[in-house]
Amino acid sequence: MPDSIEQSFVNYYEALGVTEDADTADIEEALEHYEESMTFQLNNPLTMQSARYAVNTLVPAIRQYLLSGQAARQQYDQQLTEFKRQQQNQKGEPDELPDEEGLDLLIRQPFFFDPYDGYDTETPAYTLRAIAQRLDTEWERARSWITDTSAATHPLVGYLTHAALRLRLGERVEEITQAIALRNGKGMNPDEAIERCIMLLNPLVEHPHVGVQELREGGNLFHAGTFLPDHPATSALTLYHTGSRGCAFGTVESKTPWLTFQSRQPTMRFALMPESTTPRIDPTHIKIPLHFDVHSLAHNTSHTAELCIRMENCDPPVELPLQVLIYIPALPPRVIFDSPTTVPLSLGTTRRGQRITITVIPHNTGDEKHIPLTAQITSDDAGANAEPACFHDREPVTLTIDTSTRPPGSSYDVTFHINYHLTPGASGPTTLHLQGEILPTIWQSMLRTKALRKRLVPGSIVLLMGIVWFGSLGVIIASRTLATLFFFCVLPLCLLGVAHLSIDALLPHIQRSGHFTIHKRELSHWIRWTIPLGTGSILALICGLILHIDSAFVIGGIIGALIGGVIGFLADSARLQKKKSSI
Image (tube, rainbow, N blue to C red; front, top):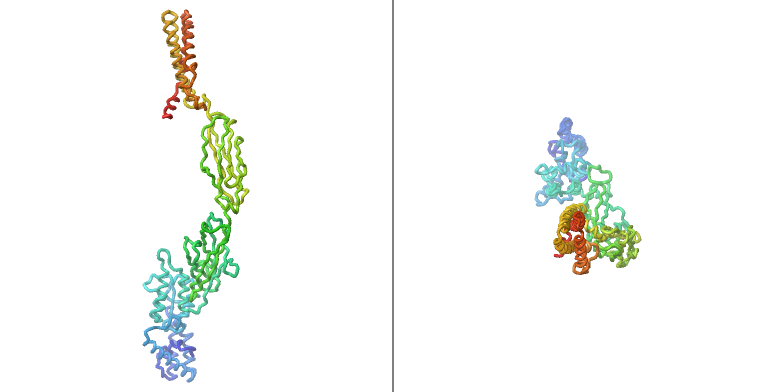
């Protein structure tokens, strides 16, 4: 006999097609025809499941309750009457059964779920709690079935609404199935959806929980690690499934502003399955990424953040408070210099032999109070030196470069190496570059302005012109006495002009070689006037005393070659460049 009135949903009289006052013979005859019909339906795949249930369950129950004696039948009839009375009372009530009641009532229409054939190959479920057990035991099949929203109404929603007449349960399941559908890539986890459906249909099911790996001090403290305040601070919290069945799902929420999760969000969802779950379903462990914003936290101290693990697969949800401990040590020295170190420091142009010095001051932007700065500075260049070689915070360091061993006109690039190994964890610029140039000689300056080949060509041309011109003047002077007086006046003036042109050409190169204070107006009158005029007068007198024409030509040619060669060789754009730069 049924243990409860709810199990009397199966009216054996209606199943046999007889009245409730039928005698035993009629019941036996009807049962024989019913059993033959169900046995025949076992051969039909579409009816085999319901027929198997009838043969294996209903037929033995009918024999037990209707054909095993008058007492058993009376007890069954009393419970059937009570059931009908309750059904009649429920029809007059506006509300259906509460969601957590009537889960073991037998439903006349069995429940099938199969995404492929439309019927089950196992015994169908006749109660809501049995439906929950089917979803639980056949999780992998249920995973694809529960997420199939191709039909307008989900099969489980339709069954709860029309077969089980549980409208509220149908609405709640419909909300779950709609939440599974991806919306902007953020739908409910399928395993969470299955667990939510199971919890609705079987609230007494075992509820799984989650655990946290590496907890200490009473099970609610997680040591995340030690993080430098100027480095990215990340860790991971590992959650694992602690039950034997079902999906454990919920959220992890940070109660502390400087602790966030993936994409810097304050909350993160999780869904976990038991250890024996196939890898095709959700994982049994999950790492929750932790991001710590430690820049604003005090150094040389520990900090605690508050987390809350909320397990929503329990009714009511269970909250597990959790503390996350991190340590922010003192910041080791972080060195910057008051001079730029990313590009070479230009020392300009200096005279050879001059000692060049520059002073740089290191600044420790770390916690100098807790970890003082101590670093070394050296150079591989034999002509470079740093004092002091071992420096501290805000201690001036003098860098010296000796140029006496460096050739004139050369450039130098001296590298000073900085080593922080004396202070563990210290960092900063590892090199200081000093660049400069040694002043060139007059000859180097001339060749920089105009190459030797370009000087020789015009010098040779003007030299030949001077030979021809002054040689011709020598012949004229030797053959004509009156021309001597003319030459005696012209030659000193020519040498004076050559002297001034030579001074103008050489003066920029002299200044470039380091004699910056020399100017033309400050030169001695002997150099500018007396020597050129005197030399010209002497040469003119010599040419006038020589009466031999060939000798006069040679002497005049020599003079012209000297004058022309000097003018052609010295002529360049140095003076013009000097004027432009002064402008």
